[in-house]
Length: 205
Image (cartoon, rainbow, N blue to C red):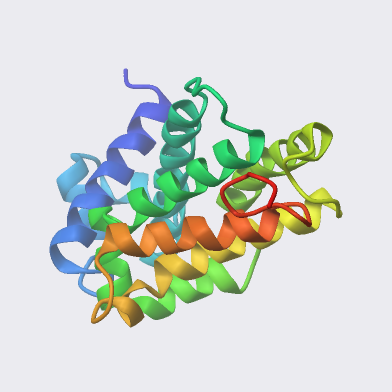
């Protein structure tokens, strides 16, 4: 018998397929159950509606991206400071989100759902991100590559800046390609986190 985790993953996988193909408004719990190969009560017992189901799906996908990009950010690079590693990680997360089929579909077709999920509450995925960002900010302050300040505040600003850049990427599409937008984000974050008297590239003037 499949475990609870596997059943829920199957349902979330089916939800992702439906949303990417049809959008949130045209996806129903019945559609998801059919595609997942489970009964409708199995879905209804776990999620009251499609909005709740998509919120959990977004959380899962965000967690996956955070873990993947955190692993890449841990690669040793000679001469790289903690700040540079943090900014590189943030840029990788933004790049992954900006090209993710699910997120691009939601941004294009149901932006109000993403706005509710990302702007109106500090959700599970936000907390997962902050658990990575805040200790890294503190580590950077210890080695002198990140400016002074409350690590919780600096970490929250990094999170919000990445989030707003990704959700607002369509505002730049007449000016910048995705990669160029990520480059601008990286420059912005590096300058924000750099101590006084340091250039954004990490070298003193």
